Image (tube, rainbow, N blue to C red; front, side):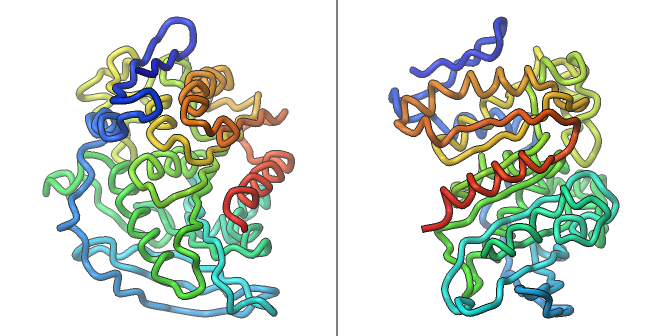
Length: 329
């Protein structure tokens, strides 16, 4: 059995049937205790993709699209597709997830005021097909979490976002421009942990980059988890677990091991006021033995820029080079 140790005080035993095979189903079940269950395949409906607009820009096309996540619910998104001499070849694709910001999907495609958060724009210029969806309740995506909870559809906004992102991967894989075996996910802050959670439930995501997206629960805001408990996140953390890291059914080591040994880069600025850098180091150190046991130690990386809660230039450079290494032939 692989045993991952988180920090000095907390040992997280990982149920593994063999030394080189973490029990991913068991790890997902731990996450579902706080997030609620992942919907079954019967929740799927045809994607019914619709294009609302198209703009031809410098080296790429930007399309506003929507697709059906489930019955009665459509996700607004931007789709960026490279153009040029090699436009007919199948390309790697990236799911680009925004931070907590009112404009939602507009920021990753370069329509916001922070160039450090325009990952979709940067990546389409590197040859990736990029999809930037709105997280429920941001941008153009109106969503009533309480109504969804009352219907029994979801127990958290986190799980709703995971489901939507999995449908977004369905959409990317349906595109003729995309090589469906080379799909990754990147995000900052809200988008950073949203990327990690989705990858833990969706094996099709081959590379994951999280900027300012996590730390161990014990080091988050000195152990006060209230910031994780809104409807957009996981209300059960308050109602079932009293905002107490010691009572939580999962931690971020479970998330990382849940998608091991797929490629994962954590960009963790040392002055991040939201996510304590030591808590990131603890999680990475705990996951390293698992990646090594799986023979893929090189797939787990972390960089620690001298910055605050941002995605600084050196972190972006490391992220894009990491994605090129793992998703380009």
